[in-house]
Length: 330
Image (cartoon, rainbow, N blue to C red; front, side):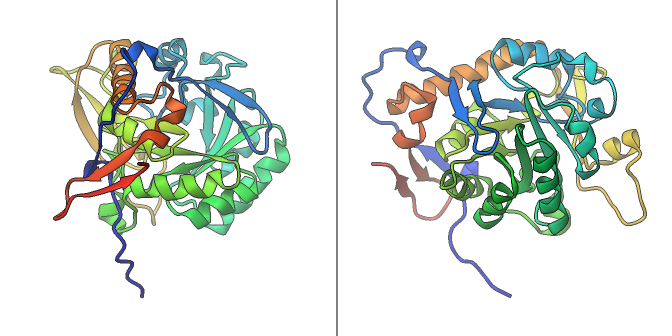
């Protein structure tokens, strides 16, 4: 047994210190990024925010809104098994995620991004699955996860992943940390995994824990190349589900709701997610505009005229501990 006493941080533990800026308007900020991927050698240009591949938010209707704004949609997993034709063929702003048993299906979806998505990315079986997918799809841009440490980030990259998905337990409808005691504070996970990935010319997705545009800003400031959001997109017209008394249901993919819907029950698996009610929020387009506005505004506070330079302009201030600490780029 070991005890690591180094301070680890979640998004709520920090703020970003403002700095002198020559910018006069948030309209001057360019949020588009161009990424070139290690193994596929492909390039992608857009705003690197992704919808989570969850039942209620990874929908065709959501894709129309996100694609219009140059964001990425990760279709809910059940669309990979059937009805994938509800999403545009050849669309660059789609990332199809599946499990280890979905490799053959994923190999047919390689025009945009494809990925392997499991709760525990630390198993040898999962590493072997990433290698198998890379062998089967040598030219595909492949994402894989989830992990939260630098060593496993590098192992997945060396196995063939272009992008590593980072996050265990931070999501608003995930109960993994409560059920298992396993996890890692999300901002520290992003910082450490991004450092490991960038050293190999690869990329990461910060997956989970963002409850506002400010959290998305902190993820990018910590080095994330992409940020995946779920709960922020829940409750909109474009989501699947009924509106009852001004609320809609939103649930984790390891919840009882998801397991019952998709028949994933077995004798050794319990739930590691929950179902919650979120207020009805109207059209997703308004929320997307609000998110992008918040990120642009943050960039103007630190003098970053491009999203690409945000992390270089960031100084985090630790706020939820006994002594405030400043760290970052001065």
